[in-house]
Length: 219
Image (cartoon, rainbow, N blue to C red; front, side, top):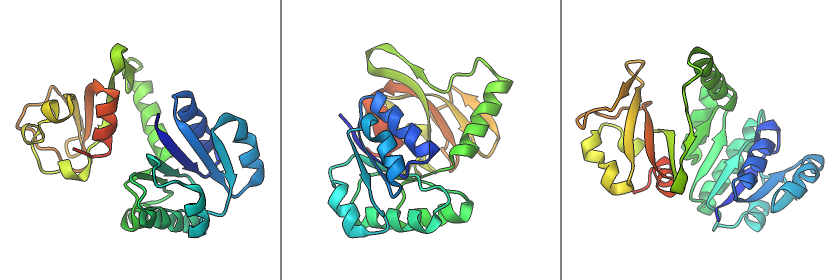
């Protein structure tokens, strides 16, 4: 069972915590607002009221064995940066942080965020695509632990061909399509000599465990 910590219980953070719990994760929910913590206490494994700018407090609550931490502190730019820095120094293996601007994103990446999210912007893009193509599936669960999903390419993939990456043998994953960042179009069943670029998105099929590893850029 995966152990996830969600820091910041605004709309995005609280919904994320509840959905992760529904998917079978052990969720630790953290916020400085006692009312928000009490509201979610019965929906997660543990809920804690804490100022996450305090590294000692973080270390006392967030175990190093946690699989990932999501920092969703909304407009609290300073708090999100400080929290991300502390988590990086604590050796947390995967840190996902919500940003409100490109400058904020750049700072978060510099201090240790592995992935930076713009939830409202990303949801707007998905909604626009769905309106234009109602039959488009971004996520399709399959039997036997398999799924079809889309992932942003990690930095280690940039500049390499699909043949070089050898995802079929390394992860047991098949690339169905590439949403090419530089061409603004989707390449279906891309050839082996396709070179992956920064900003490309892969549509892939495989087992959930291998998909999670790919999204972290491991292997």
